[in-house]
Image (cartoon, rainbow, N blue to C red; front, side, top):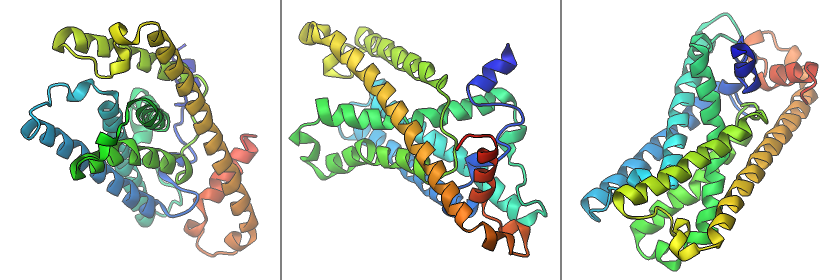
Length: 285
């Protein structure tokens, strides 16, 4: 039962035999590590600056961890730090190993950590886009650009968050999430909904005004259902984008198969070709 559970959610054994989580169809693993590292640094700086600003200037940091936007951004930051570390280890080992595809640390870790990595990766290709849609459709006002700090912070957490999500979908070989992950994403949203009402009970405010039943009335159920439906649509869209990326990467790799096979050093072989050929053999593209 336990083995099937892990396999169904995208953490089979052996884990990531194609090194998909640490490679890109477009550039080297070292370049991928550098990009992931820069995104990790920027998202961490964004979170800290906003928290410090709210605590020292606005004196309103008590509810910082009650907002889905901030929690989602913490998830982005956490994932990019984790993926940066794993990719850097892989890239360094690839440079100094006779193996073309050496192992990276996560492959040797307990399965629960592998599953958590897969699940965290699924959240960062789903929730940031949902946050962007909900913010600009329901919450944004001209006041979001009224100050330089407000403009920068809102662009960072309500626009660039989607850019980081799209990069993971398009710029890496990370496999698309399993359909079995979708219920997990909905459960996490439900848990956040509970947190929002716990926040009101303990701190006296709703993180988002449309969650207030006193003002939203019958629309509240519509908002909740609408967000759940939007989450399903975003999840499906993310799977489609990642599927299309795999198809395009396979075609590009196939077009240069002859030239790649002519290279004398096997370590120069394109990771995209190896992954694409493996996926083709498994009838996944």
